[in-house]
Amino acid sequence: MKLNFFNGSALHTVRFAMCVLLSALLMLSDHHGGYADRVRNALSLVVYPIRFVVNEAFVSLPNATFGWFTTRQTLLRENEALREERLVLNARLERLREAEEENRRLRALLDFSARIDNSVIVAKVLGVDIDPASNHLELDKGAQHQVRRGQPVIDGRGVLGQIDRAGPLSSAVILITDVNHAIPVHSKRNGLRSIAIGNGAAGDLNLTHISRDDDIREGDLFVTSGLGKVFPPGYPVARVASIRRTEGGGHADVRLEPVADLKRVREVLVMIPSAEAVADADPR
Amino acid sequence: MDFSAPSHVSIRLVVASFVFAFALSALPMPDWATLWRPPWVALVLLFWALHAPERAGVFVGWMCGLLLDVLAGTLIGQHALALALVAWLGQGIRRHVRLSAVWEWGLAVFLVMVIGQLVVSGVTSLRGRPVDPWIYLSVPAAGLLVSPSVFFLLRRPWREVEEE
Image (tube, rainbow over all chains, first blue to last red; front, side, top):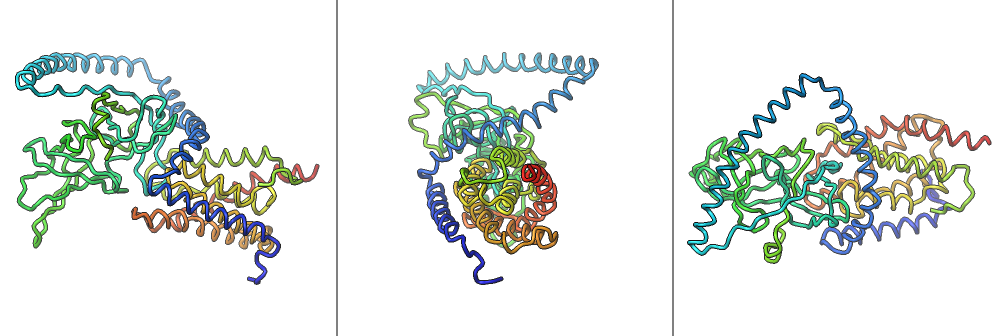
């Protein structure tokens, strides 16, 4: 190629140099959690309609269209199943209410502070990040709806992650499988404590500091331990999928599979802690 | 970014093509396909940089990149840098690539897409996040595969305006 490759476009080169400089500044600022967040929030208002329309056109509309053609038979069957499920759930709820009442009495006796009740917001998943290196979900609720950074996000089955960025109208959830996410957990079977760290693109988690001799089996359920104060205790996180005990060293590699359906979830619950909990909870 | 300069391409067409490219970028895709998502915005930008340089300069590319960063959830500035580079390269090679020679043009598109992807995924891996090495080739390859459709779709209306 000739040397006068960019001949006559000196102006473009100057512009390009400016863009490089600005990009570098923005990236550094964003990496260190600085001013770039405001740029992101402002631009998210422009991107929101695109996400919304695409989600409506390619996810909600097809679902609704196919749903419309469901046969009467299917509907009746579904209705029946739902009614049965409601009965079972109602019975369980009754028992739970009793237990809660008892719990409160005992706590009062022991002079413990009452467990904080969380309120929740139902949010729709607008889409997943198109960057394959990141495990994030985009939600259709933002700061306008009291969504803030660090709030836990769950679905009907277990923990999904926590709010990473809260824009004005939308927010991003960092999933528990992201390499930058760690969640304090304990085994439901024997209380063994550990921290579950995301494994990235693979879509599973790893337990840290597990020694060869720890009592841990395939299928063990790990729930939030409540340490770290971001997640309330007792919510299911993941099940042990495989254990590999190293021959020489003293530790074991434990792989967990998330309980929540991270890949196909359409609606999630964002937990809004009460005011006093917000005061002393530090996100991450 | 100089929209006031005389041009044979209407601003409306340029804006519409970018909106469409963003929508395609936000399209939900199954897990296995994420490595093969064509770089729609970069393709449209490159097309305009080659065919109507007064409509899509470095600044337009940079702004589109910022929006794409928000859409993709990457660092603010990551796609902006890559797309500014794509626009700059497009304007630079414009005089050297015969747009009528298919293989020359295909090679140019592929190389520019590879360079853009190097910037985006390079920054991601610099941050210590895992990057599938295939992405450096799979995304530009997907771009090359769909590029005829983009170029054909955008070229027709452009020609009609020109003939008026």
